[in-house]
Amino acid sequence: MSATAAGSFLAPRLAFGTGSRRIKAVLFDAFPIFDPRSILALAEELVPGRGNELASLWRDRQFEYCWLRIVSGQYEDFWQVTESALQFAITSLKLELTADKRTRLMNAYLEKKPWPDVIPALRSLKDSGLRLAFLSNFTRKMLDSCIQSSGLQGLFDHVLSTDAVTSSKPDRRAYQMGLDAFGLPRDQIAFAAFAGWDVAGAKWFGYPTFWVNRLEQVPEMGVAPDDESKDLSGLLRFVRS
Image (cartoon, rainbow, N blue to C red; front, side, top):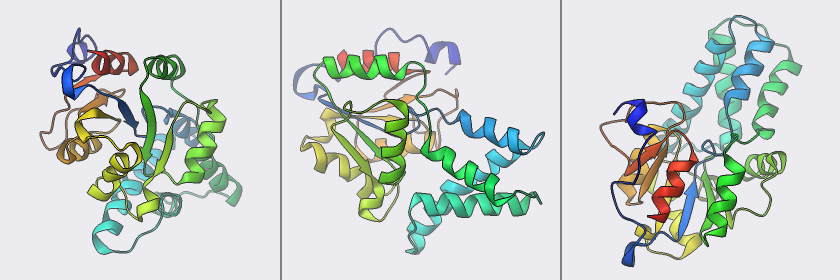
């Protein structure tokens, strides 16, 4: 699917907004809400000319470490995993970062701001009577801090960190948290994903899945979302149709 087509849907492919399948709640991964580009900008500031390299390797190892720890039964929360991944990236790239710079990079995960379209879209969803929740691998401290930093207090009915089940997405126990929190059938809870692997996990679990494909990526493992767009405007159409 081209980027133009992805951003210009007039209606979602599945009519989740009518009859017994009416969407009543939306689960969000953290990154459709919080803009991660601030990490790249800070990395480039601290390591001029190599910031993109550092941020990319750091991000890749974050999620690889999460998944490896799930399958090996050696759980660490996302903050600890993020710290380990940063250390690996710095060492692998033979960079020299002071303790202060490392702390600044880590603390950037506590100070994220929302994408420009987020607050109006969330308010519109709330005004429509939908219940909203985060379902993220972030720790609760990370989520609460970013909510405060972004001015999103009061917009979410639940703030669900997979740390509560000592696991991470795409473990089915992580996605189950949404069902337990809302007490609704899974086909009445939409999942808004940022990454292709999270689209796959949510689809396999059985959620109506919308891809907030802000980076215009391609599907993972051939698993397509029920609908997608580059921002939250497409999600508004998806849940209302």
